[in-house]
Length: 360
Image (cartoon, rainbow, N blue to C red; front, side, top):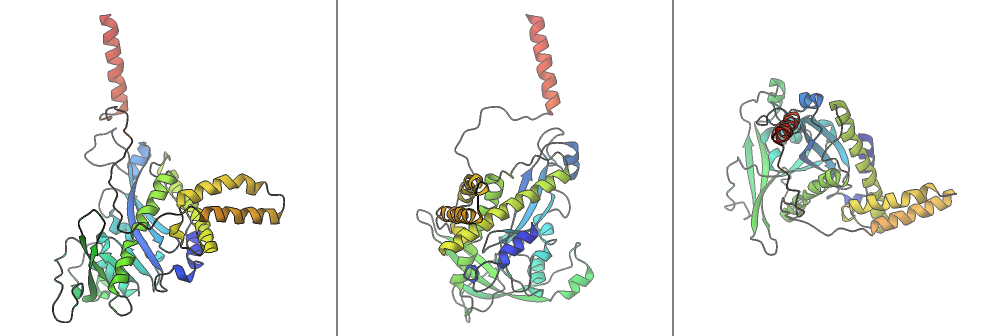
């Protein structure tokens, strides 16, 4: 899976890069799996749930390549417990990043330790300001109204960091804060504050950095393609080993479809994120019998070209600053939630049926 992601990212067209630089997007999610004893032990449920209720849950952090949309690497862990959060998993993915990269992430990842670690390796970041930090006051001498130089100072060494790693980090890191106004028709203007290590305002204007951060939404769309279109949201493995294999297999299939989208986009001169993932998957499945039935190499090549043309016609709209309600339109059946172990529920039904029979 990693090899497929790197190969597709390295072969992407230069015009798909951001200012000639590779951008990698980090985001986290959660997956559910069957309620077996093996899965419970490896991926325990929420602590407030009684035994026999709920499902084991996996925490997932994924690194996407922004240009092509492929998965470069991922980390899996428990959904609760010490050092199992998204930041802890993110710190195990250093091999996915190289000097010269730009890391795009939400405000959860904008802490001193991770920004300093990336900056030391020659990797820049564009993130939203963490909610726990003091508000940035824009304006004043030497600053534009939406562009300000800020400094973050190293604090006391955290438990997870070794003394050698702590001493190797600088005492201060210099950042640039940007104020971005998100305007959407029919909604009140929303103001965000971004932080970035791209301190050169001439090479990286505020408008360009803001536009890049808006593309962070691609990570949400990529996860939706994995969890909804490829049905990775609820896993089927009965053991942790099978569950992990299932996740990697989904990633591999996802990268294969992304490769088709990149080839189709290149053939018509558009970006891969302008092509529909679901449309590409459905088109490939429709063409597959005809590709396998091709009698000659020339016939197969012609059908392949026709498939790529069909994939390129499944376009998606430009969707920056997109907001979606976390609600569903279709109503569920009105069955109550199972709040006791299934065996207890069955026993109660048997006892009720027996008592009703005796009354009759």
